[in-house]
Image (cartoon, rainbow, N blue to C red; front, side, top):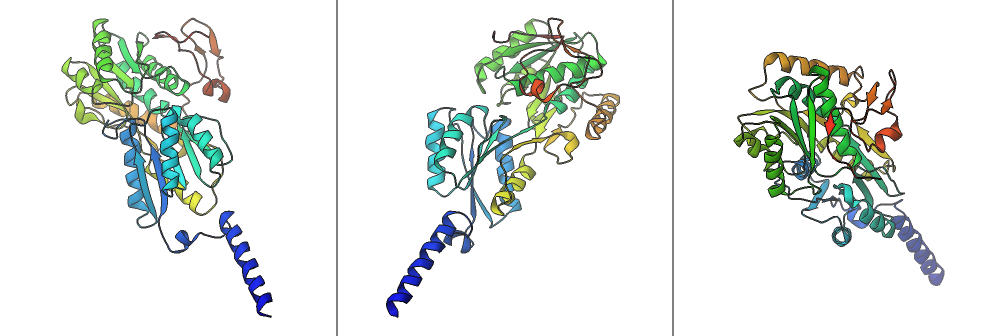
Amino acid sequence: MKLQTLRVLIALAIVFTCLIYLGILPSSAQSNNQPFKVGFLCVGPVTDFGWNYSTNQGRLYLESHMPGQVQTTFAERIPESAEAERVLEKMIAQGAKLIFTASYGYLEPALRVAARHPDVIFMQVNRFVNAKNLGTYTTDQYQAMYLSGIVAGHMTKTNKLGFIAAHPIPHILHEINAFELGAKSVNPKAETSVIFINNWSDPPLEAEAVKSLADTGCDTIAHAQDNQNTILPTCDSLGLYSLGFYSDAHQLAPKKWLTGAFLDWGPFYVKITKSVMDHTWKSCSYTGGMEAGEGYIKLSAFGKVVPQAVQKEVLAKEKLIEKGQLTVFQGPLKDKDGKERVATGQKLSDKQFTDMDWFVAGVHGSLPQK
């Protein structure tokens, strides 16, 4: 009888262990109310007042809105290389069950690590390839850049706008093209010259790019660089209007700041974390736009140099976007070579949007040859 009882207990223990492994029952750590661990992988410093700063602000929001339930960790200045895999493995060894890989080039390392750890969920930014335990997310930040372009189109005196960008990849081209379309909607003479840095952050090159654009007559500079600590102050020192990206950094350019686009990741991080914790998370591509009403994308504060009439016009256009009554990429749209990309009355298709590799008419700059 004792032997039979022992066998039953052993069998129950094996079943219980399997259920924990499969995620059907909580582990001892979870059942003891230990916090759920979430990791964040950042390509640059969280003090950049730009991309990595906005990611970290979202992380802090997650901690403050789920106190005691969540414990976060982050790694900054991690290259988009095999080093990312090493850091991801370390986070998992420390107990992370959800990791946000917050840079475009982390997808390939994240996919490899995800394949080795099916019990860990990964969220990759600005890409559209999913796996069983990896989802992707992005925002339609180009909508706020369209609105920023309207301000730039009104404020420029030379009709020459500049744009400094990290890499010629689709989500950056969305921002550049939307900016020019916004400017052109109120100023048909407005044109945008683009300089690619080919790095998410390179302060010396960014400063030189600002000066180079100024030398060509550009009096208004927008950007899509991770770091805002160089571009905005340089613009202010040269008397150039500036527009921000990823976060509201008007304090870096107190004289000539116009506005910009910034990201509020906190509510999204809370939403995803809760879905993983309650086992409702599913792998897919999450996209948030102004019309979604979730507040991930916002227009930065207007600078003191922006007239009230311009502010009022832009805020009215923002309302139209939120209501779904204004579509940025709608025909007729031609590229810089005069080729029709979107016919009159048509909208940019999902594939055209995802694979964008062209500039709209009015944008000047070099793109990689296919």
